[in-house]
Length: 333
Ligand SMILES: Nc1ncnc2c1ncn2[C@@H]1O[C@H](COP(=O)(O)OP(=O)(O)OP(=O)(O)O)[C@@H](O)[C@H]1O
Ligand SMILES: [Mg+2]
Image 1 (tube, rainbow, N blue to C red):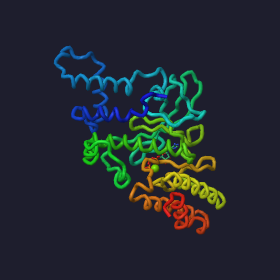
Image 2 (spheres, helix red, strand yellow):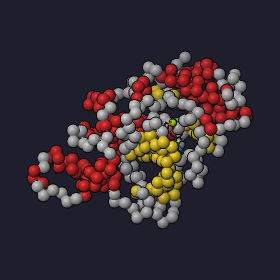
Image 3 (cartoon, rainbow, N blue to C red):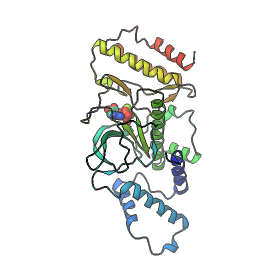
Image 4 (cartoon, protein in one colour):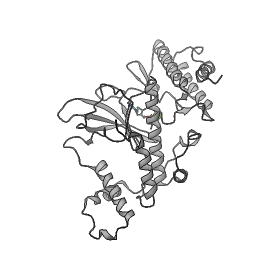
């Protein structure tokens, strides 16, 4: 257990806050940014005495970045396991998870490039060919010019930490977009941790480091990801079974006060006949969010429509009845 595990975000926000005016533009081309970091490997300037205290602190900050983000690289793999960084998922850790600090992460490719994040396939393995596991790395994009379609509405009722951050986010500066990306990573990791603990069918949330969320890979050992519900053509019996699982999953969420908030056949994976909910950064606290009931009803409608179109009798997946049931779980009736 890390003593300051829960402080990580606060500390980094404080650092950003202090040096926001000096932090390089996140919109700058990536090569440029990499070069800036690398330059810190060069000997420190001799006229150290002329650096202000603030500049010296910034330099130290960039060095720390360079060490954790850019090197030193392991002899094999693309980076050392990040297990000792950021926040970890809930204990007990699943048995399949490689937690050795000597493990390396190998990038196996992009699973899917989405609107706000890219999902990569990683192998975390011991260099001597020992134990290994596959992970999905969801990396939120910090410098995307497109607006985040989930920002409006979902953030209502969530407290913003500092007004300066709120302004940066509202103004969509590079700094602001990076904060948004990190905020979504934090939100998804927190939601998954909570949902995993209450037994909802979600991937195990392994870690969150900055804008990256590492998840249990849902798929086969050869790296083939489980299909989305939207891609399946189930028999009527299979569809009925999946609908039962979907309703169970929504019920677990509702019992703990939540709705998925972006539920659709695209955010549900099916692996070995088991349904898994993914893509949860916008999870909605149905009672605290003024638009909570609206999001709940939309989630239900999206799934009911798909299942009704795939052989589940309309009486079994009637959205009105289903919303009523979930509202009862939420204590809203
Ligand atoms: N844990 C996982 N295991 C296997 N595949 C995953 C996992 N998480 C995500 N994926 C794959 O990546 C895709 C995108 O993931 P997700 O929906 O979380 O991100 P997104 O950025 O919201 O994408 P989109 O904009 O397409 O909804 C999923 O549809 C799925 O195919
Ligand atoms: Mg998605």
